[in-house]
Length: 321
Ligand code: TYM
Image 1 (cartoon, protein in one colour):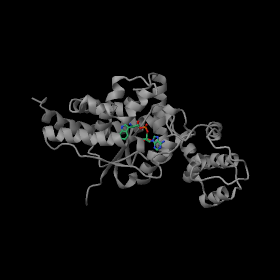
Image 2 (image 1 turned 90 degrees about the vertical axis):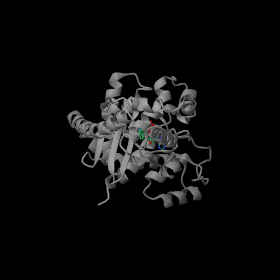
Image 3 (image 1 turned 120 degrees about the horizontal axis):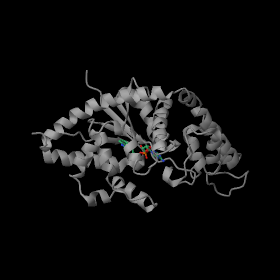
Image 4 (image 1 turned 60 degrees about the vertical axis):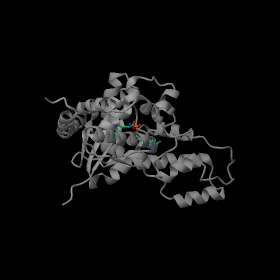
């Protein structure tokens, strides 16, 4: 029997998961991971580029794993692990950093964008794509399900693999990103890409009130009730596409002018709450010990693979005597 392909993705534990993370990366992962040899990582060292509060980071790590489990990932079918538990990631990142140039890293959109928005330009943030390359490449990953904003980072991972391979001989597989067109760029409440750093998110697992507050704040135009609304340009409708039970009916109401933005937003709140209801129950049932156990097992499985790979890498670069 042919070996299963490796699927790998990760989410930063830098704050509450939002529906952009869920629809763009986690849900696609959940829908396909059973057919692959799958790994799902908590990118806690990536989170350190912006988060310097240890209690908050600890809480976020627990929450991220809880979100994974609530969304339907089972530890029997995927290695769920914490990036910081596998030191080979930072080690491999260093080796890749010695292969790529500063001008190359300076072209990273995510870095430029974050700095432009006032985030501290720390060296970790700058080198971030090489840590992500290490995450992916250490496990001979074939496919990386992500949102559109991470596309360039997977290209960087391919570049790191190619640089290493041409310098030291074939070692790393070049991975492919998997971006679903319809969910690759979920808009936030202001219509820009939903992102923690834009403060325009709709939380995935917060209280009903928090979800309602975010949805009600979605920017709309001033079309009065009774007039047709444009489903192609409305942000509320764009989000309905992922949650509505009867989208054609809603579209008809938009076109006929029999729904206003307020009602549309209320329907969206309800659809989101209905979708996440069963997930919330799983999430609420998870104990600290259960999550720690999953992470411990995940760390062992990931380390076994990563250390094997690094043994070969160390030999090839010439540090093993
Ligand atoms: P992060 O934590 O910013 O986002 C997690 C995932 O959510 C996707 N995403 C979106 N998708 C659609 N619409 C949006 N508005 C939206 N916002 C976020 C992201 O594209 C991502 O897939 N560097 C990564 C984490 C990481 C990683 C990895 C991912 C570290 N190592 C290795 C894959 C493989 C990040 O910061 O994602």
